[in-house]
Amino acid sequence: MITKERQCRSYKAWRGYFNYIQKMKILNLYAGLGGNRKLWGEDHQVTAVELDPEVARIYQNYFPNDTVIIEDAHEYLVNNFEKFDFIWASPPCPSHSKMNTLMYGFKDSKRKKFEYPDMKLYQEIILLDQWFSGKYVIENVIPYYTPLIPAQKIDRHLFWANFKLGRFNLGTKTTIKGSDAKEVSSFYGFDIRDYKGTQRKDRIARNLVHPEIGKYILDRAMNLIIKTNVKQVVLFA
Image 1: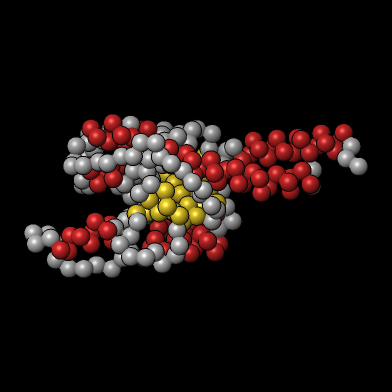
Image 2: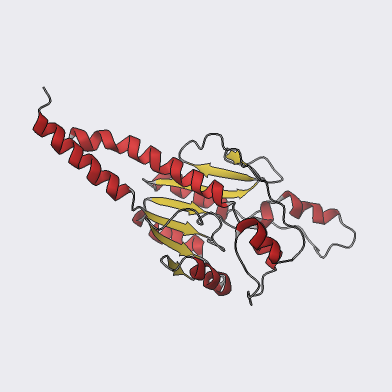
């Protein structure tokens, strides 16, 4: 028989756990400008890792409460992944991209030789899938080859995750052409006209994940974490 006292303890335990999960420790790797992070709100403790100091500066301007680290995200992940509840990674995609392979057929292409696909993508998937106890998602382009590890598709991205993403229909699809930084603002709400780094602005723009996709995936992960753990919290209250 469940007494009123037991019910009260269970309710308090559930509320305590819910308040905790609302403030997850999130690792945002290869953060870029923060397209995926834009609609996450300010309830979480977000650590963003970005190698380009100029991109990191712009990210920090938009998300002043985040901890921004200028470092190699691949190395940071392997040394720190156990400290977080949720991990998002968007490793570099050029060596996997279909567009990249098309350049080999262009007569006036600047590309002089083939290159290996960057296997850091799969290293990160395997690491998190085998050893990470939280929820993770790794985003990349749809490659020119059959993915070595099955993934889930949303819009123009593939996602490797330890939970099902379900179906998500993006209302407005985006296409960024040329190097006009104003297009970034119109599509995603970021202004990079004062970017002084070495990357092309249109490439920075194309690396953005639509904010609505980022929010949908985080919400999906949070709901699954709550459903998985709340029964245990109530049981041992």
